[in-house]
Structures are given as C-alpha cells and as structure tokens.
Length: 479
Figure (cartoon, rainbow, N blue to C red):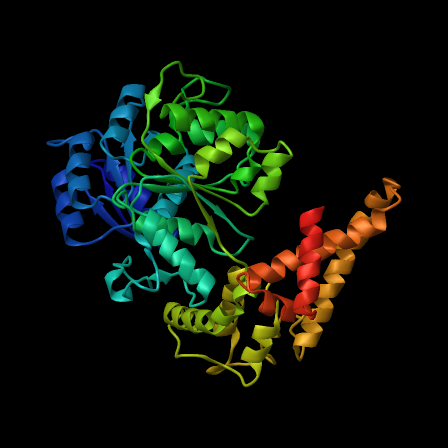
C-alpha cells in the first residue's frame, strides 16, 4: 500500500486530497506546515509527497530543499496558485518531480500522481544481479527485491557486461524479443550506476501517440497549442542528472529521431512553443524488440542516431535459448508471489516441470512469470498442477524433443510459404538452388555459433560428417 504525505495549510485542500488518496487505498499523512512534514519524513519512508508552495514560516521551495536532503528518491509534486514559468523552473531545479496549478483538474491530478508513483517504484524497487546478496539490495518497504535470474552461460555474460558498463556514463542499446527483460536490464544498469540517487524515467515510445510524443519528451510552453494552459516539463528535462530509458525506440518517427539526435549531440532541449535552449544532463538507455540493423538498413531508423545510442550493445536471449534457466526462474517466481500474496510455499506437480521445459515460451520470461503468478493465485493447495492450471497448448503436450522439432519445422515451412511467392516473381532460373544455398548457409552459421566454432560439434548438430561440413563452408567462401 502506497504512503503519501500531503503538506498544506488549507484545511479544505487537505481534506480533499486525503479523501482522494484514501479512495485509492493509500495511507495518507496530513501536515499543516513544513516543519511538521520534515519531522514525519525523517521518521518514515513515503512513496509520494504533495507540497504546497505558499505556506507560513517556510515556503514550499525552501521546504523542498530540506525534504530532498532527507529523501532524495521520493517524488515531490509542488502545488501552487502561482503557475509562472519561473516558479516551475525553480521547482525542477530544486528537485521537484512536477507541479500542479490550483485549482487543479482531477484528471491532471490522477495522471501526474500515477506517473510519479511509477517513477517512485522504478527508482526504489532495486533490480539486483545474482552476484549481489539480496540482503544488500535495500528494497522499498514491504517489497521483495527484484532480480535478473540466470545461470546459463549467455546470462552470465550479460551480468558481466552490466557490471562493466553500469558505472561508465555511456549510452547502452538493449535488444531482445518481447518479454526477455529489457526494462529490468535497464533498471539494473541504473541501480548499479553513479546516477542511482537521481531520477530514472522510462518512456514506452510505442504507447505515446506521435502527435503528443514531442510534448511528452521535451515539454511545452503555455499557449504553445490549443489546450496548453500551463507550462509542462518534459520527461527529458524532468530526468536531468538521471537516466532516461526509451523502450521500443524503433517506433519513433524519423522527424522525432532527428530531434532526439540533436538532444544527444547538443545536450540541450527546447520545449514545444519555446525559444530558449535548456541544458540537460541525461544518460540514455534505449531498447527495441525489432531487428534494429534491418531497420537502419531499410531506412526506418537513422544510422547516426543508432551509433549515438549503441556505444554499448546488450542482447537478451529468448527463454527458449536458455531453457536451463527455467527451473531457477520458477523457484524465484514461486517464492516472490507466495510472499506477495501471503500464502504458504507452493510447488509444481509431478511432471509439470518437464512440460514447462518442453514449451517454447514465445512470450519469454514474462509469459513464464504470468503462468507462475496465476498458479500461485488459483491453486487450491500447495501443489500447482496442470489439472487446475492448464499449460499452454501449442507445444507443451507430453513433450518430447521430436514434437518440438516437428513444430519448429512447421514454423519454418510457414515462413517459407509466406516469402516463396515473392521469390518466384523474380523468375530467375537458379532461384531454387539459391534458396537451398541460403537455408544451408544459415544453418551452418547457426551450428558453428552454437558450438563456439568447434567443427566436430557443429557437424553433429547438423547430422553430417566433418568433411561434408568443410566442403560446404568452402563453397560458401567461394561465392
């Protein structure tokens, strides 16, 4: 349950905000002056602070400085009847998350509070790596520390890379399929960086309409467009000194990519409708589930922006490529959700783990997490059995490796059926041979990569002799 402190000498507003937060099942502490609030914040941790600007003895801006000395990560929303640009700028300089102009609209209040609480969770819910003792993670009160789980060689390489780059103030480009944990990796980098006491703000580029995205990222001045009745601080400016995570960055249009490139190059922004450059110091972490090299090659993503963002590249493998991590992930999720939902420890039914290992998990770790969560919530007793919670039907039926192979071949056939008509339209006489050569080349490269260049192991994976493998490699080199 989130805890909020409201600081205002207006009894009517205190009552309104207390009722507003209580209806959302928050715990509310009401303070009538800054001194009382500072004492409360010194005693306990809060998730959000609502602070009035005009108060007796100490005004809101001065109180903000005192509060930030005690609690750096808790978002503070300044409430004021004086919505001037100078006040907004000064509030941000002193560490406010945002400001609200009285009398404020309840929709604005709900939106800003929701965003602030999300930022609070992302900043305080520490994401640890397996090498870090969970007792040292300093989780937010009442929350189980989050961890990236994996003992496989691929995940160990990722942990090593995160450890190497976290404290280096460089951009990191994270790739991987949906559900592989790209945001968790970004948050782990943030929590182990030198900017951990500054804001961490995540922006889902695919979720913000293009017409609103520029304002969302850069902010806008009052009167910049119809409905712009106050100056709005954008995510980049709000994140000054901290870390900005741009998820699904490949969804940005080319004009917005150009503006983002300017921010990175010049280290300054200009609000929509403004004519003043504002310096910003932000570390950018970006992520996408698309094939970003293909996006660049086909002109949908700017190459110069790509190289600015890809100082360090981090690729998260799909779960099907690290199935040896599934048992550890299941144990972690079982422990986490049993604690979260306050129930005794759960276990998997006999044979269930084998079927989970057989499944390809197209939704990756997120799909596995949701399956375990449902199991903890819906199982009647301590055993999670597939009779109570059916496993995904696509390839988790009594699952031998042969069945998995047949399904993968079916997916290959489906893919070929989709592109074959386009290839045949070229009407080239050697098309069939070229298609076979392309498939053969991909298989050879994949086998060599999986076997770390060992030709004996690669030939066994392909079911051919080592001499045949060498002959095919020679043909590829001669093309």
